[in-house]
Image (cartoon, rainbow, N blue to C red):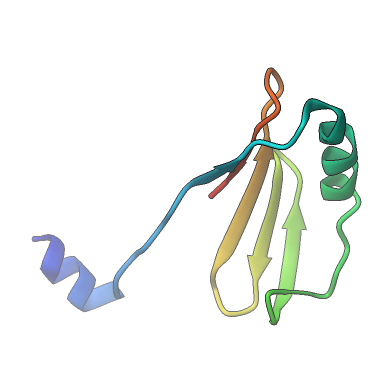
Length: 79
């Protein structure tokens, strides 16, 4: 069934990673994410930026990247 869905709509891939910067850098990282306004990311145009639950970059090619700092530990999760 999954193969039939993929044949119709294309494959879906996702990944999750974590970075663990020093605690004293978290404020700088959070500020940078909140003020991110670049017109492109990794060579792809940024269509929209949403800041509801982290910083979500919707890219012009249909892909997206969510960067979500933890509120309780020095961790930034990337989806």
